[in-house]
Amino acid sequence: MDIHRSTKSKRPSYLLLDESERVATLPTNFIQSLERSPRQRSQATLDLYARRLRDFCSFLEDHPVFGQYRVDEAVRALGLPVMDEFYRACSARGLGASTIRGYEVLLKQFTDWLSTEESGRVRERALYTNITYRTPRPQLRMPRYLTLDQVIELLKGMHWEAQRLVAHFIYDTGLRASEVPRVLKSDLPVFEHYPSSLMYFPLFVRGSKARGKEFKERYTIISRPMLIRINRYFKSRTYFTNHDWPENEKPAFLNTYGTALTTKAIQASIADALNRTSLKAASAHRLRHGTAYSVMKSGHGKTLLDNLIVLQRALGHSKLATTEIYTHIPAPVLQQMTEARGPDEVRYRFEEAQKIIDATFLPEKSQRKVIVIGRKK
Image (cartoon, rainbow, N blue to C red; front, side, top):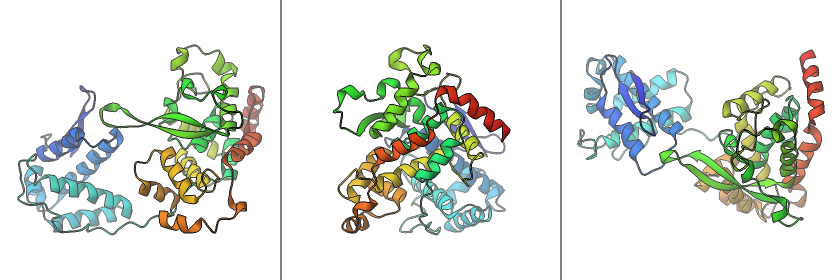
């Protein structure tokens, strides 16, 4: 089974082709129905769904019984025993419980769809009627994040201030690596528009892609020290002398060569810096998790529940339950913890930001020296 993507339209249209390069009509129509659905799904999500449905169809093609039929015929005859076989095969491949449950969530949607009018009602009733999920419920894992000291160590492993700035920016604001290149200089708050005593500012974010290639817009919080560090960067020779964009369209961050920053470049700079540290793991996503931990320990709100709501909006989650997974603290428990929280446990995030800058800021004249030292290592 293979996936063909047509890029003639604004969004790719998926075709699932069997081993004889014939279109598997039912799986293809299902994926295309997800593209047309009013529910907004990012392109990455649709790609993931298409790959997982392809894996299931490939399993059917290789099956000793169902493999004797075309995929569409096999799909019409699906029963729970063959579904269980597929989930066991996924486990045998070494896939984790959360990934296997992800496969089942999609396949439940697919088999439910087979009984709808849109599919032509190829099945009289949904396969999962009155049946719960058959795969084990995955256990919630504690989120993996970087602490303040680990962020400082990671940044020290970077040779360029532009790289350190971006990594610090992710930790300070909670943006995804894919969202950072979309931040424009004109999006950043202007100090003069706010009281001088203000330590946090609203930052406009073009979030993850939704239906029709539109971005989910939101606001997050950026600290004053972080904003000061960015303004220093704007005065650097690499950035200030670059006139490749109109001022109102200029990206807030460029790479070390002065060209447009990419998500892959951000991820590569973090991975490269990791090799120069004693840290076992680091990524843009762990920096984002670090934002979650930092906000929950901060004094943004009067209660921990207030902080959870601040975090939900900053990270761009539509449901509070999603944010609870980041913190691994259920909302009712947060309310109970409020009274027990002492003043020593409150940490102001602008103080964190200033501590990171004091330890990692790299003036332009110092960058060449750092590179030479790095080569000696």
